[in-house]
Structure formats: C-alpha cells, structure tokens
Image (cartoon, rainbow, N blue to C red; front, side, top):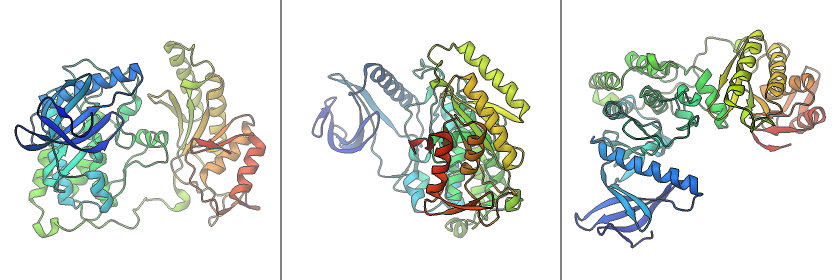
Length: 466
C-alpha cells in the first residue's frame, strides 16, 4: 500500500509515519468519522515461513487489542486484509514514546509514579483477560502530548493470549533483553504475568536513574546480567525516593517471579505515594548521585566471570537430540560445581557457567578448565567469556588496572592454547596503555598481537576477528 490508498473504503493513507521489521505505519484519515487514525500495514517481502508467522502474530495483535478496553491502551478501530495485504487501524496519537523522553532527562519521582500506576493498571486488566504483554519497555509506552498522565501501552505483537494458539516457536526468546525477566531469558515454558512486572520494574528504575538497570555491549552480556546481577537499590542511586517506592521496585525486580507483587497492588501503592508528594516537589527531578555506594573498596569488588558456549552451533549440534543436549548440560553442571560454578542455559542455545567467588587469577584458571570441558562436551562449539565487574587483583598495580577481558584472555590462552578467545565484554580504549604482571607496559596493539601469537584467533565483542 502507498500514500493515497483507501483502506476498507474509509481510511485514506496520508503519509508514512514509521517503518519497522513487521511493517509500515501510516498516518491516515477516517473519511467517515473525519478524524486521524494510524494504519499499520504488514510487510509482505519475507520468506514463506517467516511471512506466515508474521501474519499470525499480526492477527493475534489485532484480536488482542480488540479485547482490551482500557484508557491507557492504544484504542483499536478495525483490522482486515485488502488484496492480500493485512492491516490494523488504531487511534492516532500525537506525542513521543518514553524512550525519546528519557533521552532528554530522567523523570521526577511523581512522573515515574504516574507512569508506573497507569501501566500497572493496564497490566492488571490485561492479565485478568489472560493477556501477557511480554515486551514492556520505554519504546512501547507512548506519552500523548508528552504528558505522563496520558501514557498509552503499545505493541501487543508478541503478547501471549491464553484464548489464542501460540505462534511463538518453542524455546525461542521473546522480548527485549534489557527489559526481560529472568524466566524469559531462560524461555521457561509459558511466561506468566509476573514477567511484565519485572519489565515494568526495569522501566521505572530507568525513569529515575537515567540509565538502564541492565546494560551491556551485546545481548548475551545483557541477558547474563539479567540472570545473575542484582539491580542496585534505587535509593542508593537517586536521592529523595520514598522508601515504599524503593521497596516496591526491588520487589518487582526480584529474580523469583513468585515474590513479585501483583500489578493491582503496585498501582494502588504508587497512587497512595503519589498523593503524598507536594505539587512543588513533584516538578523537581530527583537528584542522581555522582556515585553510588558499593559497600566495598575498589580492591575488594567481587568479580563475576561467565564462560559461554554456543551449544547450538557446535559440530554435533545438528544431530544432537534434546535428551543428549540435556545430558551434556547436566554433566557440565556436575563438573562446574567442582570448580565453584553454576550453570545456566539461555533460550538461544547458549550455555553459561558462572563463577562468582575467588581472586581474579583463581577465577581465570577455573574458567579455563570449564572452557575446556565446554569445548569437549559440545564438540567444537564456540566458547567465550565475559566479566560482569572490573578486576581489582593484587597482582595488578592499582593505578594500571587492565581490562578484565584481557587479563582472563591471557590465562585462558595459557591453559587452552587451541581455544578461540572471545572478549564479549571488551571496552578498552585503543590509545590506552596497561601494565600487566608488573613488568611490561603494553599498548592495545601489543596486547592483541601477544594474544594472537598464543591463540591464532581473537574475537572482540562477538564481532570482527583480530
């Protein structure tokens, strides 16, 4: 469809408003009601299987929206198919999404509570109808007229609806990594409404802190943090956050879905707290602290090391049965336990062994042994690692701390000479110089060349090889 087309005999396409992976959104005019509307048109240039899945998902979104009658959900108008082209009509919204708003500045405590209580109310209503959104994030929360009191929840394209057959492939990951609940990251069967509460907790934490609760340079790094790292208490990041709000966010971000509050309880609590905030204070942004307390000195910070194997791409992956895969993961878990590690499995086939206790040198040696076991168990699957905290070890001069990725790479290269090394969390500046093992000061290029000499291959950030 193109600008100027008339859809269903009444919706005239005026201009293209946006384009995404599933299709194109047009601003249009309802020529019967004489009001603006949005028309989403499904993309039709996909491979046959992907096209069928997109069409099924599109139809589910339309029916789900039609079943939800809530003032904070984008209003459904109509859907159908014209000459083989699927379309969905909703109300037209003027404003911008929360993601764009947060690029300007964090929200005030009052604004955050306003967004939180309204979105929580939507989730309560949707969950009561058997609908789980599964992708609550700033980009799917629209502020009409840039007003937090007019927030709308958008995009139910990946929502689960118990009244409809699922179109999600078993074992696949649904959602956006930085806002996924741990059970989504693991793809633990049917995802319940508690996952939406975790996602909302991530959004509200970001609204106050001005940064994401889980950050990383790639999806695997972010998912590892979702599974393993606890989000700092928002009261240690932002001044002036009421205790009840900080506690409710901590509960929403609990790794265990059974301990998260219901959306109705969260909406009520936020409304109660909002009523106690003086109007003048409500307009002032909460001051963000320059640094948050960790309770540990720099040289006492705990290091979390994750050894990763993409088990779904090893030499035996194509012929390995589900039972064989599960057996190998179980064997790895038993072996990893001897090295003080625990094993997590992500929905995309990545197996992660997590080491959390010990000095940096000891962690590196144990990581090397686990990496060897991963390679043996999954027959050539790519193996890498990432660190979730800086290394502050006694054998590093305090004023010349190398990136933890480089430090572990050297230990892995020593223990596993044939192992391809992947620096999944690489953040070094190429102009920097480091002292490693006290006696040599090396540039970025010298460190890379030395690693190449030992391993023959080095991959940084999951992208290009050196």
